[in-house]
Length: 567
Ligand code: ADP
Image 1: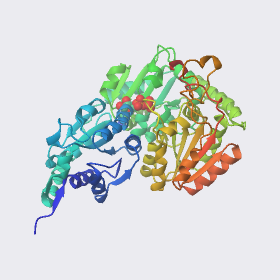
Image 2: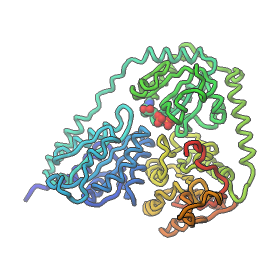
Image 3: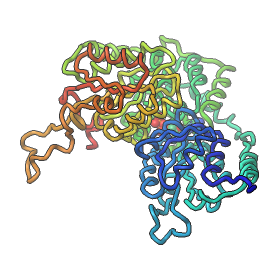
């Protein structure tokens, strides 16, 4: 009897499982269909999408939520190109993702083979590592190597290319087992060698102790590092106010008394020492420069990436894992403790300003405005989410006004419960994120608050939600288009195409809820507070896929949200 053989697809599936992968997102087709089912047979659940772009966004978010690499599987050529969206998005956000693509037959490369593309060259600008298996025996080693590279140092995207001929090569069961065992043994992590951080830790603690107006800035790198306990302890023991970035929200609960979110301008404009943990001083933080920041502010940057520290030239830079570094700072402070009292002028100024702004916002939120502006439905959604308690739902948020206003209104009290357009301001991420969150965090409900434009990028994935029966409620803020549809004044409408719809407009009052109904999910059309409350209560309770089509006054939002000056 001939010895049983294992082909490249089965070997890749087994290697992924042996390396710890549990989920893979993607679209099958030539030459990777078998790889998806082989991986599933080996214990890696395959989530089949309608488009690689969404699958890539799912894999990226999965990397952030779990701290383990998100996996994206694509076909060759165009599939790989579609996958670049998620791959680049992951790298831009410093999230670990491994894209695995099939590619054309090696013997036919350069001769115009089916879906031929130099995929290593195509992926290189967006990854930390791009490797190709040129023979079946390469597969296990490269799977382990590429997965490890996604999470080492600053997390990011990596790429593994497996040509069609390699997927069809075979070896024996015992050869396969030996290769996987060897790759596993080679990857056995030696305990990380930590550089001594003592000097940086002492300087940081000293600077914080002597500061008159200290601030802790919490980025999504701190959320990724699972530094929540350490950072909460730091805030609680020192009484220093904190400011989260959008996806740093929840590391310390938004409801914490020392939250400076509602006093952001004051906090960053007047702090004299800012401990920035897992956040880049990029556009989101106004580059750490005046006029938003004081010119005299001293930054203490904590980042796993040395180049990041070199780029920003902070007063104190500490290269290390956020959780570990903050634990060490806590230990240093414990030996010589200090705590700003709530009556400290800085703390009082921040808490008073935050309270005033919250009261102003609450006065706006309290009104039931119909037709809906952005605030009324967001207040109702916020309250419904808070009523869910713990574990809190994962909130997915994208759109211009929908995301901007949503960031201020929606409350995050648990870490890694907010996913949004991120560092790149990427639109179209929402449905992929929802699917990733539902499989990565099965105990949590997933609630997406989407602009109609953001939703449209990947709306076909509602079918994927229904197919897998995921507990995802998507609320579409339907204001007839980008920023609010056609807002042209009569003078702007000139030229031969003046009768065309405006580039910002969609079909008015589109029936997005019916897209969900088309696949057997639950759809709701809501225009009043009572209708929205009832749809939320029913769909949150059901924990089944639902789309709530929420009609918003097209004149309610601002063009470009808060980025008008750039449009
Ligand atoms: P935000 O969008 O919240 O401002 P950024 O994406 O700009 O956050 O920055 C996140 C930073 O966190 C990146 O510079 C990244 O290198 C860093 N980072 C990632 N993982 C860790 C970790 N484990 N410890 C510390 N920093 C980390």
